[in-house]
Image (cartoon, rainbow, N blue to C red):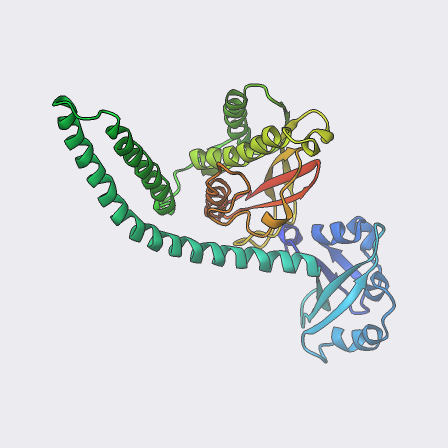
Length: 363
């Protein structure tokens, strides 16, 4: 049996012998307990958890298959601090081991549930927005057309001595309806078209974004590149990933430049934006069972995401900026999910990190 296959799982898996001792542990189990699989081998399963009378009484029978699949909540012991886990023990009749023990932390299960809920919510929101946008665009086009006709009539009157200042009003109407129409087009644009897949190094995406951000913000803050050179090539839509990372970086850049205008925003030191790449192990993704992933982080030392915006920051039209459209992060999240990945973030004053997580291999 290929034991390496278990290392791509994001949940901790322990193979148990007939007496309940660990015969094999996967990479996620090493991460959970904070020790190598060699250290775990031979340890009795019950010794990996806080003393529990029910587990001690049921484990021998569970190993013999008396209870079928056993589910139980326990406290796992580890060097960095005990952690609650949900255990599933499945007996393996006729297999090389007596049972397989799977452990999940409630936080990871909640994270996965939240990601699935967010995906469903975003799909519902985009459907509603597209319907609303179509309803708005029709009368908006009529207003724009009427303003253009009126502008033409005023131009004729102007040539015969009419007041030229009246055309200023029609120009405002035309310009503003054009701006609203462009915004609506962005809302209803078909983002679900097939990805144009190719293989490339993810740092090509980072370097493109680095150049664009440096040009746009004209050295108003330091940009640090912290790349992991061991990250292998990935398969994806290069242009969409550039747009995804660019939207994340622009959001951070705007937070840095606008936040520094306030006294509170200046207390976190010289403004700095970091582009960082890493390889992640055993990560939960909406359409993946775990394994290796590429993590692209955009980190800034600005004032942080307002508490009132944290739950809705990826919603369309949600923005904390007076001039913002609230579409940048929403589109970035959509592109990330098209690649089988996601964007998550953590934020506090002085440190905000948005992470684009992409599976190493797309499903």
